[in-house]
Structure formats: C-alpha cells, structure tokens
Length: 337
Image (cartoon, rainbow, N blue to C red; front, side, top):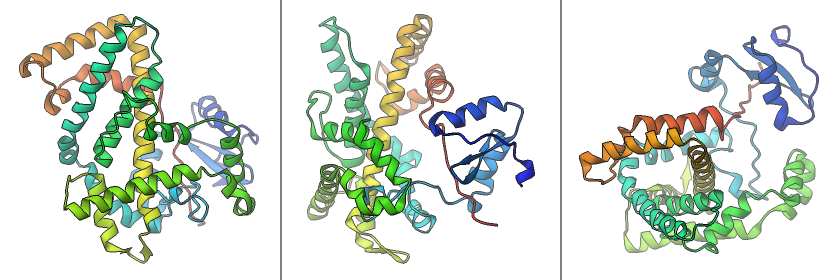
C-alpha cells in the first residue's frame, strides 16, 4: 500500500494542507500524507470515494471525530460516536428524514419563511446595510426550533433569544475554542483539564430544553411526528442494544440536529444572497422562474411547486457544492489489516 501512495512532506497547517494536496496532485487518484505520525489518504477519484462512502462502507464505519462522554456529553452525537452505537441509533433516527416526513414539515418551514419575509420588508424600509450572516442565522434558528423542537423561538424578531445566544457560543471562534480544539488532540491532557474549556451553560441549556419538551409531550400525550417524537420513543426504551440511553446521549442527538441544521443552512443562504446580489442577470432569471411556477398555485408556495424550480436548484447546488461547500472534509478510519 505504501508504494501506491504519492509521498509528500509533513504538513503543519491541516486546515489548508489537504486542500493544497488535493489541488497539487490533479492527476492522482489518491494522495498520501502524514498527520503527525498517522498515515492518511486524500481521495480524489470519485469511484474510490463512492467505494469508501457507499460500496465498502462496512469497512469504514469509524470516523476519527472527537467525543468525550465524561467532559463533553453533547459530543456523543450521531456524527461523532463509534460504530457500535452509531448503527442502532441511526436506524432509529433516520425515519424522521424520509421525504414524507420532510413534506409534512414544509408547512412549519413556510410559517417561518413568511415571518422572515415580514421582517425583511420592515428592514428594507430603513434603507440601511444588512448583515446577512446574522439575518439568515436567526431565520434558520427559527426553522430548526420549529421543525425539530416544536418551539416558536422567534429569533428573527428577538436577537437576544436564548437559542440564538447559544448558537453563537457553539460556533464562536476565540482563544478558548482554539485551546479546546488543541488539547482535544492530546487525550491524556484533555482528561485532566478538558472540563475547564467546556461551556457548561450550553450543555445545561440543551439538556433542560430537550428533557422539558420530551416530558411535556409525554404528560399531555402530544405527537407531532417530528424529531422530538423519535427521541421520546428512544427514551422509552431505556436501552438500545447493550448501551444505556441516558438523558445526555438523547440530548446530544437533538443538539447536533440544531447545530448542524442552523449553521450550514444559514451559511449557504448567506452565500446565495451575496452571489445573487452580485449577479443581477442570475437574480432576474431566478425571480422569473419562481413567478412563472407560482402562477399555477395562485402565488402560494407548495412543496411540489418548489421541486419544479430547476433553476433555483441549480443556484443552490452551484453555490453550496461548487463554490462554498460547507462539508468539504469527511474523515474515515481504516481498521488495521
């Protein structure tokens, strides 16, 4: 295997090195690098990537993602946990993402969008510069709050909303976050001082919100067929396979749903708004497509008519996948062979 790997020098800055390696070896199917003392492969060939992620997925079930149940219980999410927990949890959680369930949530999304539209009309009247990044983050916070937690958060009109405040904390980029990520790479040191770098209020907030919502629905026999309902069903089992379904493990799934949903969506929306503002021809063409398709529904946006908007989909795909991909890097571990 070693002979098949293109040799490169050790790279110190991981955030840029992989992209540099990917761009440098355009004619290679794969590129070998060392991350500290760990040999790694960067795959460039689409067929190889498909093999790892789909065809031979059973061989690559583990991701080298940090998780620590003791110091950071919210890291025990579906995105980070070991395969022994990941498989049964994914089986239980995946039904909420079926096309039928997503279609049922469309009405909730539309309500948030209409509220967003009213707010936009209000700020346009002021004729002042608008910070789109904050604007879209507040909108997606409302969407995730409604679709996942069944809550009317109203972050779009209330910038000091607690959900919004916690969202800012999760993705802030400061010295504390830098050192936390640094010591995460040294497990023995993290086990000693890691707790000092954890935002206890974020952890307590999401555990309290999730458990309160679960208990409220159970007491009042409420079913919305959403993500919280799936977590309720999980909690009722107490155990899944051979591991305990603790409050923190259940909350970790809600936490990652919130964090991943609002951050990636808001960033993508921000980039789309910027590109449309800079490219008036594309903006006009997109507006005309939307207006034309909405004629058949008397101006009402529906799930089905949204799927008919091919140019809108092209704008989204071009912005998200080609220009500003929020998920450029996927790590997988290969077990010893």
